[in-house]
Amino acid sequence: MTSRRTLFASLVSAALLASLAPTARAADNYQIDPVHSVIIFRIGHMNIGVFYGRFNGPAGTFTFDEQDPTKSSFQAQVKAADFDSGNEKRDQHVRGPDFLSAKEFPTVTFKSTSVKSAGSNRYEVAGELTMHGVTKPVKTTLEKIGSDGKRIGFEGTMDVKRSDFGIQGVQGVADEVRLIIAFEGLKK
Image (cartoon, rainbow, N blue to C red; front, side, top):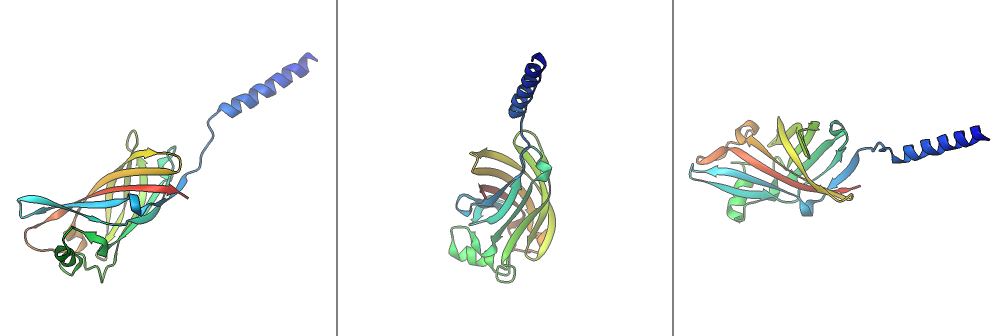
């Protein structure tokens, strides 16, 4: 009888310990929420000041694994014609052949090639940015802003040179462009 009680107690203890142990989680899949996401750009003008604008409605998907960030991946795109500087005449110029050539190259895309932890709630993301028909390697550090189990948000910055993508622009507009990327994902 004692050995049965001991065996029973051992089984109950093992089951209790198993229930308390952390369970392995698979990576979560998300759809970028274009209503709560934006890509803001910052570019120098005439060596006097800086100018800001945005790309509206970024879209895409991502997989995020907080326990093993190397299993994470990000894919996003935005329509080049969704460029918005708050001035329609300037917007048409930037969408045109001097800059984005939005009719010839309608989308700007990003696809990650690696993700790794960069500290608390920070992730170094390397990938390929395709813009104006040219693909170049880029890096950014994304910061996880928050999560509620259904939705998760990130923010990061990326510096690119428009000349690297064959965008000549006009005199007085800086070559380097800072992109500020803020997006929320909805769990699929």
